[in-house]
Image (tube, rainbow, N blue to C red; front, side, top):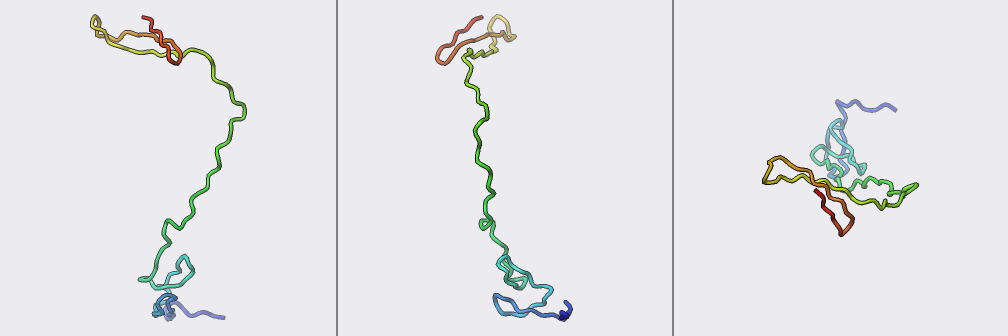
Length: 99
């Protein structure tokens, strides 16, 4: 069955019943064919959130090492404006400073 050409074709809006040129009508996300002044795009909140995979456990986990934490701190002194290096070695709750 042949269809009418776009130049002479008219369509009826599913929302208001008004007559529009068929080439100007738009299809909404609900499937309704409406005129250009009645077109209502889909609201962004209606799009489902993207699902991401759940976090997985480590394959071969290793326990924490019992080594002491070493922290290097640079502090200026009154005698020399340059920075001297201080080394601090310790564990949780205990800090030993050696110069």
